[in-house]
Length: 228
Image (cartoon, one colour):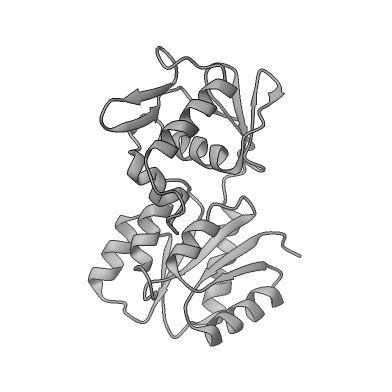
């Protein structure tokens, strides 16, 4: 039996029921959501191994969800849609979808696609940064010089977002959109405060550290990153 979990982002309750039944029958766990914002939030869960993503969602386009998902994870994504126009396919692959599966779903083909993507998932266990920082990618646990850092969920999500975008600037606005698509974080100062707590817990000074403030733009991590 597989242990991996598939996130299903699809607004049709009937299709969600069918996909859940099918995936469970071939040994996968499932998490169903019915709109893009919920999908974006659940995609950050460490137990999610693969995402099935519809384009025609009721709140935001699945292609917009895909673009945001790619700011924080390389988890495989299968885009599914009745609109398999060339434009949609190009957009999906430009934003690094792994597969574009046309509706109506061919379940024999979908099984082969899911199995193939799951089997090719990077089995790297740890990311090692400078300053003795290590991330266990299986649990998203952060440690420094062998000591576990007790991050809150928001701190952990923001730190991992910055690591995922190593050497790229993440604006406060982007961080808010990714970390809280439902709008509970209502000002950019909240992100600033979270960055300060991350620095304190990792004993990083605002100056001359791997976690940099880019004035007027946001934040970025600049570090050599090794995998093992």
